[in-house]
Amino acid sequence: MADKLNGLRVLVTRPAHQADTLYELLLQQGADPVRFPLLQITPVTSADSGFHLLKQQIIDLDLFQHIIFISPNAVELGYEWIDQYWPQLPLGVQWLAIGKQSAARLNNYGIDAYHSPLGYDSEALLNSPALQKIAGDKVLIMRGEGGRETLAEELRARGAEVSYAELYRRESPCYSAKEISDALLSKHLDAILISSGAGLKNLITLLSSTGKELSTDSLLNCHLIVPSDRIKQEAQGVGFNRITTASGPDDRSMIAALTQ
Image 1 (cartoon, rainbow, N blue to C red):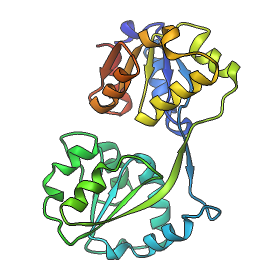
Image 2 (image 1 turned 90 degrees about the horizontal axis):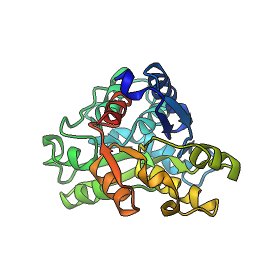
Image 3 (image 1 turned 135 degrees about the vertical axis):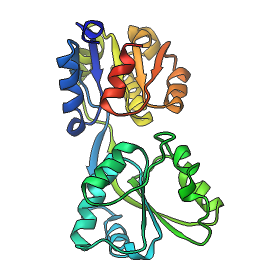
């Protein structure tokens, strides 16, 4: 694989605190990675309007039958909260996660969490046996502010009472026109690694802020690596021509997709 990646200029768009391993793996395999985070994860603080609701939800964890973590960020920030108020985990809770990465992080914290082996999205978890008979149950979804409603809507349709514990905001980093140009426009990019739909939207917004339209430059011809068919469809909708769906959102799966 190293030969295939040699000299390849690859845009790494993971949030800054999650990009180091991917960046180093690309370097080791001969690529020329470029750091350009498209998401900034900002934890909820006491200055935010949702802080007191979030605190009460954590205090009341034992009132929920199912607790679902949407992402690794939700795991890290959610566990910080749980560790403050629950020196011992509440009994009778089924812990679930979207994707094996999130489940593995929970397991590292001593939380035995279920994840669907069928995929890395809400649909895969909804198709698993764990969430089929939940009428009357209370479900807490640990996530960032906003985001997809598919999981909550379907769980409510199955009779569950669903609440959101919103732990963080996904924000677009601030870049100068020069920083955007240096990363995206001044040198040819061979590939772009996109980890979420929000990141894809931010890429287009940042490019537009420089007065450039996506269709007027070579970015549409870059090899775009995405973690799901849903994001692939979004990318096709804005005109990307060469898109590969990785087998998962983890670093090694994203790198493997570069050679396809």
